[in-house]
Image (cartoon, rainbow, N blue to C red; front, top):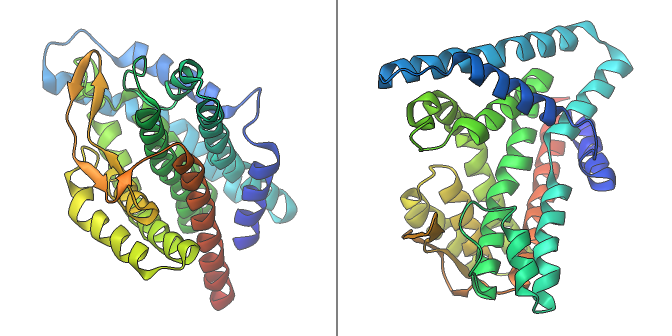
Length: 313
């Protein structure tokens, strides 16, 4: 298990996401196709909820049958190869860091226009009028939150259930990304997708929050950062709109000694939100610090998984 996880993270570090023929593109097409066929014109909330459940099952079933079949069919080298390939395609740490750097570099040059355009690819809030500190805050939030979604949760489910586990997680996470909105169209239709994603991310998110706290402690050689991260996670994380993003971002902000959250502009209107973390407001250099925190947390995960593998053997 550990060798597969290490190999997949190294492949991701070397090559990053495939530029062409990424399976998630095909998955997105399949989800859209199912939605077109099951989303009706029902005015009933219950009808939309049932349609969303049926659509979720139709998306999941054939993919999971194929994953389980291949997992049982292949042996030896080919099974290991498939496991590394599957996990590599499910994680995206290098892509996340590259997106953050595309915001970070223009900010270093005081090119706010370019930075606003780049951060718009990471967040859903309006970015047209953001100042440098607000861009930095939004980018740090994205790095910390997606560190859990795009890296640690995938590793967790691979460690728990192998190839079928990580495939299920990635499909569930993509369904939530496409259907899990609180808009008029998806409020009921996407409810199953959103709730299942919340359930699958519950444990990984809290393990990520703990690893951020430990990584901040080790990195800064200060027990205060660990205590701050745990305190922010416990006191502030529960107040965030997402039950999993809140603890992750609060712990990360506490470990970095910065303040995140506080709301933003969505569709032209200011939406208030709780403050996460403590200390000074996020600054440009904190984008790079957030990326480093994710990397150090990954090293902690690899070390713990190595110990688990060694003890288990």
